Length: 102
Image (cartoon, rainbow, N blue to C red; front, side, top):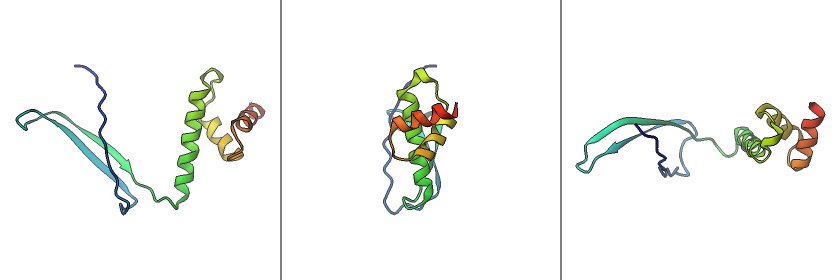
């Protein structure tokens, strides 16, 4: 058994209902026969006008912040709390907030 990476492009229509979907992917051989296991991926479509979108942006910012500063060993909880408190004031303010909390 070996591991490999495979990119599957998925296009979401603009009128897609905001709910959770389950996508199922499988492999086919040259004669169209299926082989291997089916890959099940859960996809959640959210409405852009909801607060959940803001929370997602905070989580993405916190995750990228942690990746930029691995030497500081910030936890995800610290980063999310700092980004919620500081907002869009910049990474320097986030670092100051976390250092004050520690």
